[in-house]
Length: 361
Ligand code: COI
Image (cartoon, rainbow, N blue to C red; front, side, top):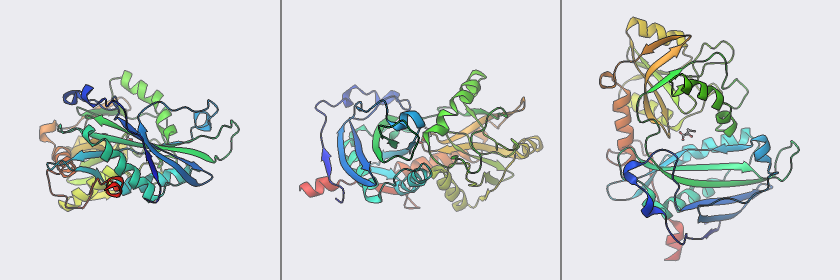
């Protein structure tokens, strides 16, 4: 291995205490985690160690200035009990795009893949078998300089933690627009998976939840006219048989699930348009009876049907789930490919393999 790994196994596994029949999202964590450091551009100290708290200085720059990025990925097990990763190189590319925007070091591909494969191999018993469940993987990196002046940083930690997880949105979601807040402008960090994007969404999200919605449907900051994304998901609308999703204009995330859904839709002969779509176009289509489906796509959320959209006090209801032509079928197909139940026609799945195990033999 290009980057030597030190491995320390947990003394007592917590696996037997997990109720896999009742998994929620983001509440439980696997036995181990991966940790590496980058000092002045040099990657060192790669370790897989028991999941636990980290000791670091309260002056660490990430705590003060939010130089933190992350990814969301999932591991699955097929019927042969092989652990599988879904498109890990797509997340690698996006992680490094985020790193570049936030003046952080890029993670080398070898390090990215080796850390994921070794960690998931070690905690593969934590991958749930239950339908709709998976082992959620959270790679993240943050600035560690013990310095509270504002300057580009030189010392970073890169970690991966794992979490056996159920559905992020167990039922169709209600979303609302807002003209009070903005998620991202051109030239900002909307395309990066930067922690601050999510921190800034907490107040609008709390207000949306208080009004009975699950999420904000973000619109552009100039006119509040064009749809961007949902914050935890990219968004698609099916109007008169055509699937429309906002173009990658630098304000939204280049979602791995978004890309996979576009490929699946095209494979089935559905026309896909990546372009500006206004909230008025969606409401007009609903009025004309040609808004057939609306759904969000994301790693955590998979494909989540939207049940209601509220804009300027007007609410529209999408057709009931048993009548919608796209999102339910697409979700079953995508989840089928991920779990190995359906053929991997796009070569998206990567079998988890341990180089450490091979080296030890
Ligand atoms: C994901 O879909 O993996 C995300 O990171 C979205 C959210 C859970 C923050």
